[in-house]
Image: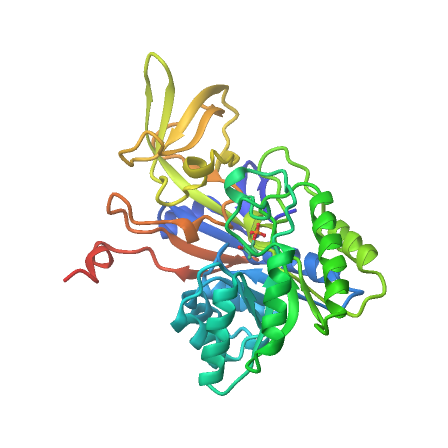
Length: 412
Ligand SMILES: *Cc1c(COP(=O)(O)O)cnc(C)c1O
């Protein structure tokens, strides 16, 4: 459920006309709805209401500082995967004790920065990383709280590029290796094993794989207890899917219920790391039609947003719903919506039924709030898009459109 809707024959973002935003800020333009973000965050927070829990928004889904601040003010923690994301989170005022650090290749300086910030815990992905964290923590005279990321070998039934919990994936440790890592952690004075973690994939549309992973983790945690390792935090990662097209993913409340039922009675703090499910449908990408052209094979709608702005269609063949900002009730034709970039993979939609558009009209690419701007680039020397946050009838510029000068600012 989101607050982008058609009223009086045009598309609104909460209390603001999208056309007005496009004209005022230019296109391509990312538009986020504050009410939608809050609603989705609350849905997760309430989903685990009965359990001791922490909702850590995954910064890689949308790392805009204003957006992070908005979530932080509502009590959200964050899941980070780099020093840069730590920097953003701290700038956004996120409580460090609500920050978990994931990722398979944490660098020495990043570990140091996170230890100095006193984050809640590191989700550790290898024995070498564990030793590195232990060494740096000792050097800084501190203790690193860690969890081991378990690869539970569960099929999340999603796109192969966004499956992360299968044994052929690079993420986490299997339980045998993890046992060794926990024992090593226990013997390392500068490391305190407090949690267990997994993240099995993204855009999951079923609860089954979550529950399967959870059961494996709980059984493993019970076995570890016998070795004197006391797991207090159980981090189930992110991954809940959203509706891009016709998917019907479970609601956070259903996931929460399934977790509560499975955990029943144990004294654990449950952490979830949703990214897409909070931000995905809280954002759209507004774009302007530049030209249309009809070839012997296809109808093309050429727009000013491209794969550098939103790469998901090119990268994963992902589907994003596209709609007119000002519908005119025209008959639909089958078109490819493409950008100006010199790559055949530069498309936002292929073989899509859309009205015959005219140059200068605006289109909205829906479900663009997660893995949209954060995956954007300057390819073809295209300055990155602006981002705005709508709050009722108020609009805040959350990131200026880049300029040509920005393109070369760091070049010597
Ligand atoms: C990407 C990622 C997430 C967020 O995934 P979503 O599908 O956006 O919810 C959470 N945790 C980890 C470790 C991740 O890598």
